[in-house]
Length: 181
Image 1 (cartoon, helix red, strand yellow):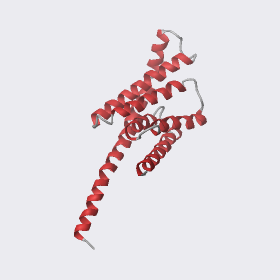
Image 2 (cartoon, one colour):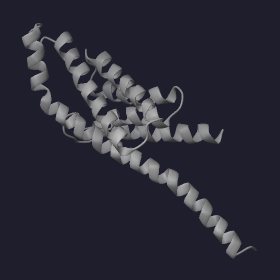
Image 3 (cartoon, rainbow, N blue to C red):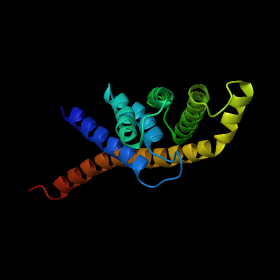
Image 4 (spheres, rainbow, N blue to C red):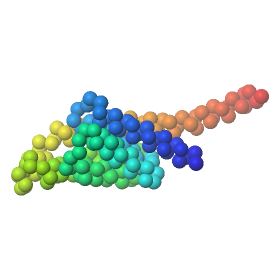
């Protein structure tokens, strides 16, 4: 029961941060949603992991505007959640960094394919697809930078908090030894 309550609080906090990151002023694609997807995959169990990034996108898209590329965007975040699941077994900053970069690349490839496929912005041929990917490179740079920043923030805070609890238990045990009454 205690674990479920902790997960629901964590999910809610992550959801709020992801939503706010889309509304506060920011460079294009520099949001916490991609990082929340990776984080959810690693730290949140069950369906809550999928709930956080998808609901964050749905709520913010209702206000920012619905679009034809939503299935591609949401699908790429689901892939990031699955990528986050791989981090459960593979610990370390190098694995986390590489997984973050893979998630950003997948987001770039999938969502820009969606833009090319579902909008009239580019000719529907190989040259149009290449043009779409080329013109989206600045957005990719911001996506990657945002994902790295928010993953570093979320994962560092969590790792510190997980290490803090044993420290506090040890401190209480020492106090009991020193002050037994």
